[in-house]
Image (tube, rainbow, N blue to C red; front, top):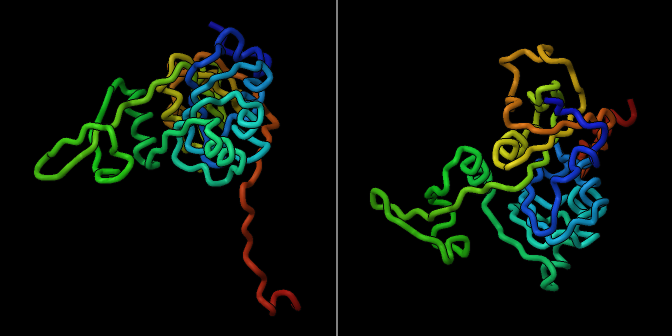
Length: 239
């Protein structure tokens, strides 16, 4: 079975439809599958529910799907870097399900592991718990959270082979491995595409059994949300 596709549009062909649920890997702008996000925008598919830690920034990442109004609902943890997101939400144009970050990660992991629900202390007694079952265990209250499983997961990896075995690099790993397991179909964009056997087995993070399609993106556009640098000391400036 050939999993390699020539470009992001081809890798997504026949997978997209209106009102579907998509998981998009990344944390901030780190490790986001931007080439695949752009390909989704170009199809014009709409009414999307997108599960992602955040919604990119204005003009980049998932932010471009907000600009085109293709996203109907976000399941997220943090959205503070995107002004358009806030505008659409406050105008009633965008639905939002907020999740504590650890809860979101566990909901995705649970979905990939076939666990339909679990109980957590996080959110008990807050708006997060409204409308959800709360149960007592050993004298402590816990709120029930449902696992998440999507129609499609799009992920970004540093390296992958022709079978779809994936390796992530440092913080770009983030939500990508969990999401790769938690969808009917997983499409991975990889920076370095290598032959089978070139990845040390112990280094594989996502086994190829979870990945159905791969696209090689050797020149991935990587941006920094907020560049922070240390100010030079006076002595250094005049050295």
